[in-house]
Image (tube, rainbow, N blue to C red; front, side):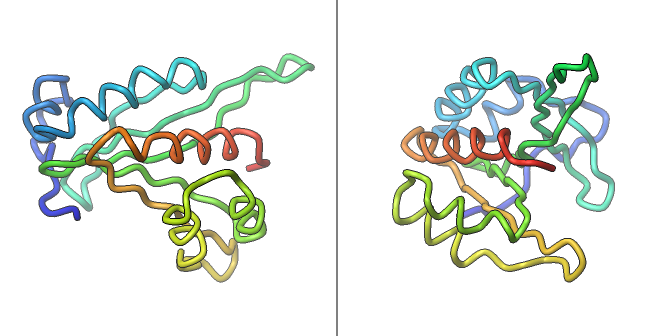
Length: 152
């Protein structure tokens, strides 16, 4: 489980050595996650969030439509904790059944089923992955691919 939020120095944009120190043994999973982003055409950028007093990374998918319009969509949020990192992907409630039909593990299906709806107006929920090892990355990548294809 997550414990202590890392990357809390607002004056220093997270560099790999800082992330590596915070993650410890989980850093190899983080490297594999980062290495895969290019294949998904996702650009990750770090942002400082004052309410949480920590750095968070946002994964952006950018594409050009057939009419030449540049579009972008936030695919995930990444948080670094002492010893693990967390990947959060938000969906509209109307997409829950589609997610449950993906070829993911039973534990990920449970995360999807049990996810709380956060807003009455937009009816959104998040799928949160705590990553300690690379084993959970396959399901995260499946969820990311699905998010890229969905509207909004």
